[in-house]
Amino acid sequence: MNTATPLCLCGSKKNFADCCQPLLIGEQQAQTAEQLMRSRYSAFCKHDVDYLIATHHPSKREDDDKEQLRQTLASCRWLRLQIVQSQQGQANDDSGTVEFIAEYQENKQLFQLCEKSSFIKEDGRWYYLDGAVSNSHQAQPVKLGRNDPCWCGSGKKHKKCHG
Figure 1 (cartoon, rainbow, N blue to C red):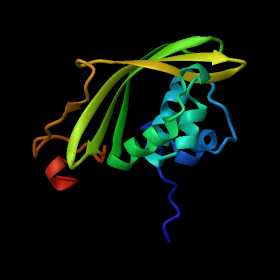
Figure 2 (spheres, helix red, strand yellow; figure 1 turned 30 degrees about the vertical axis):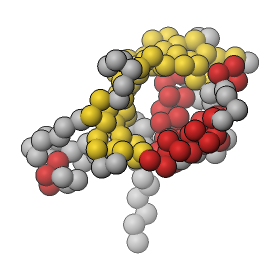
Figure 3 (cartoon, rainbow, N blue to C red; figure 1 turned 90 degrees about the vertical axis):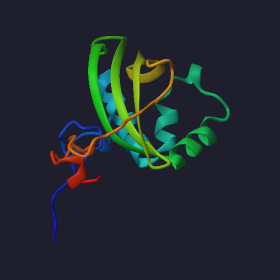
C-alpha cells in the first residue's frame, strides 16, 4: 500500500495537502499573491471552476465565466508551473504581481503561456485581477527534443518519460 502524499501540482515541492489543497477546499485563505497564483494553477489542473471564479476579482467576472472555464479546462491538460518573479504581494501588501510560465497540452501539442498577473487584496482576501500575456498575446507551441528534460519534472529525459 502506497501511503506517500502526492506533491502539489503548483510545483512548490510541498505535499498537496500542505500547500494548495487547504485553499481549494476553503480551509485557508491565500496569504500572498504568489500563494493565490499557485492555488489558482492547481485549480486549473483540478478543473475547480468554482475556486477560479471565487478568486477572480468580482469587478472582472462575466456572466459566462463558468461555461468559458469549463470549455477551456475540457481541452487542456496543465503540466507545469514556473514562477519567474513576484513583486510585492506579501501578506502586508494590498497589491502584487506574479510573472509565470505555465506549460499545458492541448490536442496532443505542448504550449507555453507566459503571463504577468496582477493581484489585489481587499478586506484581507487576495484576488486575481488580470494578466498581461507576453509573446504577442498568444500561447507559444513548445518543441521538446528527445534528449530534453521531461516537462513533468521527473528529471528524466523526455524520450524515457513522456516522449
